[in-house]
Structure formats: structure tokens, C-alpha cells
Length: 44
Image (cartoon, rainbow, N blue to C red; front, side):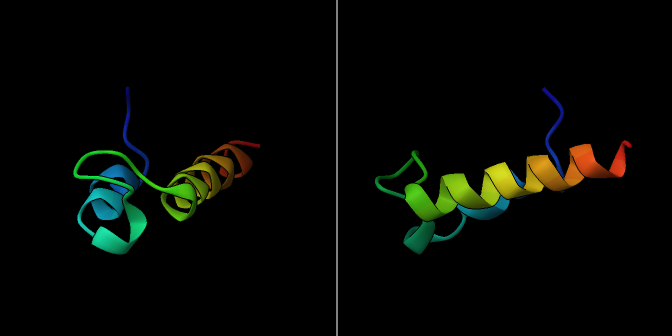
């Protein structure tokens, strides 16, 4: 899967965006979803 603007790495690098060592929390998932949405909007 193509990583959009390294958002996964950015989220997982910040403890405040993770619920444990490897899983994003609500804010982390929201940032990833927003990045995906923004990328899809640019495809229009």
C-alpha cells in the first residue's frame, strides 16, 4: 500500500498519537484518515 506523505510513520513516531507501541489512537487514526481524504481530493 502506498503511504500518503509518510503519515503512518509520522503518527507512529509520536507517543501522543498512539494507544500502545504500534497502534494509533483516535487522534492518530484521524490524522491518517485526513491525509487519505486530502490525497483523494487532489486526484479530482
